[in-house]
Length: 505
Image 1 (cartoon, helix red, strand yellow):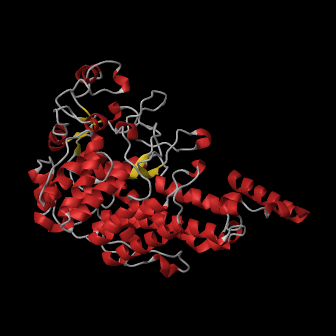
Image 2 (tube, rainbow, N blue to C red; image 1 turned 90 degrees about the horizontal axis):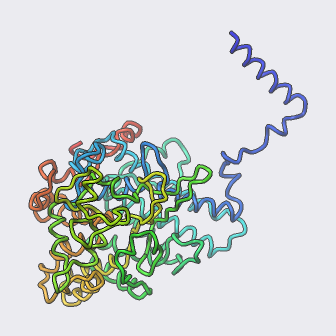
C-alpha cells in the first residue's frame, strides 16, 4: 500500500508543477530520442548520421554478441579448409557446420547487416532535408550510404541466400512483412548501389576522415560483385580501372598487420578501430594483441603444408610465411615470446606444443592493453593484392592466361615467393584457388566465400568433396546444397509469416 501512496504523491507533484506554469520545462525535447522532424536539419546532424553508419559497419558492440571480429573474421575463417576450432563451443559449432537458427552468432550476423541497411536507408531518405549542405555533399553522403547498403546485402546474400530486400523505411505495419526475393534481384540492387556510389565518392579523404569509403573501394567492390556472378569481362574492366588509381603493394608484408601501418598505399578499404574506451566508448575489436587468446584456433594440416611450400627460389620461407603464421622455425617470433623459441613459449604457457601452426596476423606488438583479448588494429576488406588476384582470375577465366600470370607474380614477388612460369588455364585456375589466394589472405575472411562460389551447391563436384580431399576434420558434417548457407534466424521466421527457412534447417 505504501508504494501506491508514493505513486500518488509523485503524480500529485507532477500535477502541481504543470498547474503552476512549469509545463515549459516538461516540454523540452529529449536529445536522446529525437524524431525525424527534429533531427535532419543541420550539417552536424548529417555528420552524426554518417558516424552511426560507420559504427554500424564496425559493429562496435560487446557482451554476448561480441563484435566485428567474431561476426566477420572468425565466422568466416573457421568454416574454411585453412583454420579450425575445437574448443569454444559457439565457434566450434560453426567449424563443424552445425548451424542453428537460434544461435546468437548466426542471429546477430543477420541483425548486424539489416542494421546497416536501416541506417543507410535513413540517410538516403532524409539527407536532402538538411540545410547548409550543397548538392555535391549530399551526393557523397548518399554514395556512402549506398555503398554500405550494398556491403550489407552482399554479406546477407553470401551467408543466408534467401533474404529480404528493404530499400525504404517502413511507413505502415505491412511494410514490416517483406518477402524474400530471388538472388538475381539482390545482385542487381548491389550493382546499382555500387555503380551509384562509384560515380560520386571521392578518390581520397583528408587525414581526419580516413576510413570513409572511396571511389577505389566502390570500384573494387563492384568488380568483386561481377566476379562472383561470373561476369568476367565486366569484372576485368573494374579491376583494371583500380590499377590506374595509384594503389601499390607494400614492400613489407608483415607491416600490413601490425596496426602501425594503417591506411597505407595498399589499403583500399579497411575498417577502423581505436583504443579509445573513455566515456564508455567501445572502439576496440576483439582481434587480440596476444596469440595466447587464440591458441584454440590453428591452421589445418592442409593449410600448414601449403605454407611450408611458400618459399623463395633458394628454399627459404617467404616473408608472407613469417608475416602470417607462427611455427617451430627460428625466424618465427612475436614480441611477447621475449627471446624464447616457439616450443619454449608454448611449454612455458602450458599451451599445446605439438607440431601445430598458429596465426600471426594482427598480433599487435605491444603490451599496454588491460585485456589481452582486445586490440585496435584495423581490418582490411580490400587490399590491392586482392585486386591483382581477382583481375588475374577474371582474365584467366576468359582464356587470357598469359596476360593474367604477371598479376599473380606481382603478388608473389612482394611476398618473397618464387615466381610462376607459363601455366595452362586450368593450372593457373588451380594455383589461384588453392595456392595464391589462401596464402595471401589467410585469416582475412575471404576463403569461405571463395570456396562457396567455386564449389558450392554442387559446382565442380561440390564443396564436401573439396573439404574431404583437403582432409578437413569436419568434412563429413558438410551437406552440399545446405551448409553453404546459415539458417534464417528463427525469430525472423516467427515474426514474419512471409519468410521461409532455408532448406535443410
